[in-house]
Amino acid sequence: MLFLLLIAATVLPSNGNRVNGSIDSDGVCVCSVNWPDNVFPVEKVEYLQTIYQTLSINVQREISKVQEYTRTLSVQTYKLQNLTRRVQRMETGGSYTELDFELLKLEIRELLSLTGQLKISLNGSNSMIDQLYSEILNMSQAVSQLESHDKHNVLAIRREIATLKKRLQDCEEHRESQTPTSVDYGSCDHNGLLNVSNPMVIQLNWRGFSYKSGGWGRGSAPNSSEGEVYWVAPLNTDWRTFDSFRFYYSHDDLLLYRNATTKTLSYSYYYSSYYTYRGQGSGMVLYEGFLYYNCYNSRYMCRFNIDTDSKERQFLTGAAYNNRFSYTGVTYQDMDFAVDESGLWVIYSPEANVGYVAIGKINVTSFTVERTWVTRLFKPSATNAFMICGVLYAIRPVDLRSEEIFHMFDTRTGEEGAVSIKLGKVLEKLQNVNYNPSDHKLYVYNDGYQITYDVIFKPK
Image 1 (tube, rainbow, N blue to C red):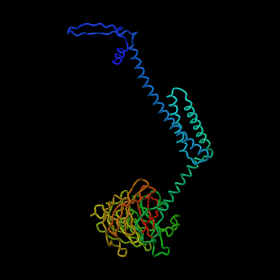
Image 2 (cartoon, rainbow, N blue to C red):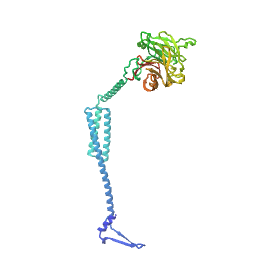
Image 3 (cartoon, rainbow, N blue to C red):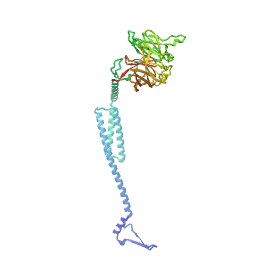
Image 4 (cartoon, rainbow, N blue to C red):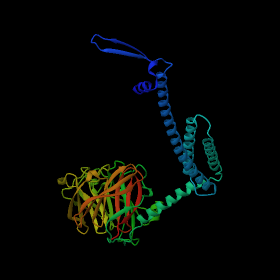
């Protein structure tokens, strides 16, 4: 306002002014000047200034929008060129997958959406925007046609080929990792257990599905010309006792249930001697023509000669018995006999160890335990165990279809620790696990079924 007054004072003639004055109570002269509207329109000048400022702001805003639209249009044009090249490559027979189609369609939808927003923002038609929108629509139609023209299921075939290639690669890797180290049967020229194969179901035991507990395996019969024998010993349906077992002198006879030899451990009498050589638990094993097992209701070890039918008993000092410290889920396996490259073992828990496993090396000549090792393995925490080259391996459950070999103890060095080797299974419980050094297999009695695993060793 001040600059307007100054302009007025210098421009307008003095005789055109009307000045009225008065003296206030303090003796001060107060003057007022009245400017006629026809002389200088001050209020109109102020109004014009306001309009000018508003227009300046709006022009700057529109310029910014145009610049932003220009950048957006440049980006979208580049994307469109990129999409065009990709579609052309697909049209000329280049490699593509279903994912390529999905990605193209997603990007086209985004371009259409952004271009539509540009059109709305410009409040009307724009030749450049219209052309861009039209090209995007044409490209969308081309991609749809490419996808629909896949009459020969090229995408499905490619997916199947990719799946087969992956399975083949996995199979090759699995085969390489599972290739057994060349170790002679009966030799310990390796660095211990590396892995086991998937289970191989041989057959149901000869007594039927109801006989879920028991044991089986392959042994040697030194006094027989056949040289090998397959034995099967199901427990009675009490899951505790057995009075007889069968063996076969060939694998074919085993599979066909033919030419079986049945041996009876005890006979039914009405006095206590009936129980003297009755078997208890599923910890039995056949070694050098003798079946070794826990004598019924006692801490005695028994053995039965399959050639002569002779029987022997030997006291296992301090051993817990009668299901005191059996494996988890497997009853009355207080004594678990095992065979490996170095001979015969018994895995048990002395009463003094309150459940912790002891490993006894059996002298088969005197039928006595000649040395014992005490471990940190709590027997009821395992489902079963076996020996390989003087090393104890214990198993524990994982779920209904798998177990884990989780603990080892080396009687040669005293080394003890954790391992982790998956062991698949057919049914829930493994009642008996026997290793055979003559063929490097585990023989497992799994809820009445006879199954085997191939053992794989670490190379030296």
